[in-house]
Length: 113
Image (cartoon, rainbow, N blue to C red):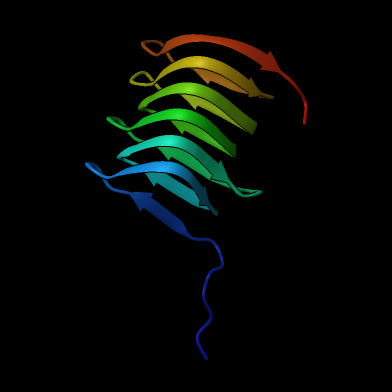
């Protein structure tokens, strides 16, 4: 009998696009575009890679932004915007890191979940 690790990593490739709502589990890497909503399940980690785009709402425990988000970002545990990252919209998180070079044009609500 094989034993598998229950955590998974999934991704959406560059030049791929989803219009609507995408629900992900565990770790998700976005290289493409989502026009709508990206929802992570409890304990999830979403990484928007350089060149990715989300126009809509993102929700997860932990979010790393190397791409571009236009909309609402809700990160229960932590949000990290890297030097290539860009956020335009609203942010709600309990922990925020913005690296030099990042673009942050957002209102923010800091909270303890």
